[in-house]
Length: 614
Image (cartoon, rainbow, N blue to C red; front, side):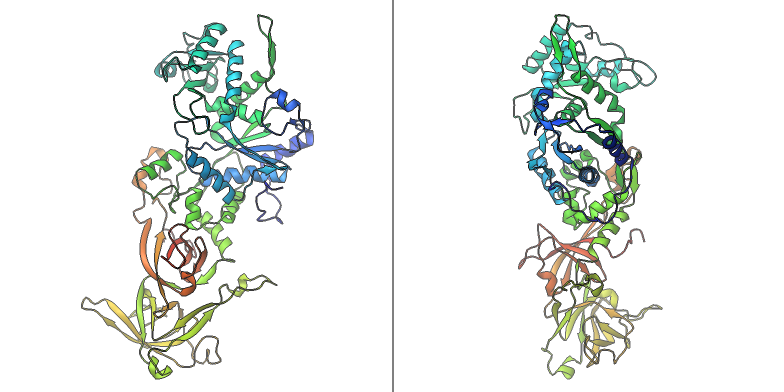
């Protein structure tokens, strides 16, 4: 089915968790076997006209389009899409766009793009299951009028401060609003005035009439509608009243015939209200005037289940705080490679496979999960180790001059072809054709890492120092003879002699033993590159814990931009192509700023091993 994400580990059995147990139980009991679905969202009459639902389960991922998806959203996507795939169903993409003041089309587009990048396609049975809560506003309004007519909702004209004070707390019951005793006719007239724009923003709200003494404060007459004059990205200026999320959410699930509504733990206390809304809209009752009303929804109703959030150290996932980072210029947009947004992680060089592995390996439990950021980095290394082409880059270059080059090869201008595998043999599966070797030159002058030379080496140092032999990886063995310095004492050149007939891959390669091999790039064909050395955005593991100002935990060293020298194969990289820079770690050609034949720009994704704090 096309809505299924790629099966990264198809041979592995799906990990057991409480959500799988719930779905297995419901399928064994036939809870949703007779559920009807008319091919599109709708009320009870609409679905009754349809056939038996071909999807054995219906789940949903319901982002609010008020920011970009982040790593926590990826966990929810992978969980819902994976359960839908494994139990013969579909996962809907639903934009929970009930708050027009914070929602933008940019966010809608970015959510779709990142969902597809992660490997999710919301098609099932030949139909796209992409929906908008705002397309249900007419039904939500109809349902609100039904609640009013039944005496289950009223218009409250208290100020927000009065409502807050009269709500009570965990040790004190709430106080009834002075407007709670209005008749249904009075409330209906007032609600229609709200709809028609008669009253200013914030002047009144529609509230459910449940129980102001309920132990669960969420049942103390929660708000259903508020007045907000704001242009909506989907409905324009049709409405000046908008439903509250806690009222809209269960209705959206029911109209789409969701079977299992899976959300994070902060919604657990809202579950009784979720059930209350659905039951009241499913009931058929007779009003005092003899009219029979209700039955807007039908059984079986969706059921809400909560799981623990995925949290990573050194990361914040509050969209409000992420937006603050963007708006105040602490980062360069939502796709800044230091951001935990999926757009940022993609630009940083993370792969969908690595993120899906993190989501799958972290499982699903009834407790919030904290993982060290290094776990995500480990997932990426596992993915790229076998497929990222290798290359040599010198990040802190100093020139190595082979003083006897002309003596050995006849001319200082002579260069010689060299090659190295693009992937190590261990990364090539049996029967797989290896990629072409990388080609580069060696000449009299090459760039090496400044740290690869020590005039007075510490104990155990095996790289270049006077009298020591070192192999230039893929090239020749050289013997260090000294260095040149400028007036300040800075090393400007390292001097060495090339040892003839020791080129890698030739019969004489092993005739001279060197204790170390170092990476290098020839001056003749090396290409300057802008390399962005990204690190963690925050220097504290939980930057906003305990109400701290997260901005004070920003890592001043989260980005360092250098000019490096890279071998020709790296300069020819396509945007978003990943590499392992030998010795240094994993890098990606920046998807926005790198241009083939133009500016060469690489981002550091992660090192070859976890070195944070070491």
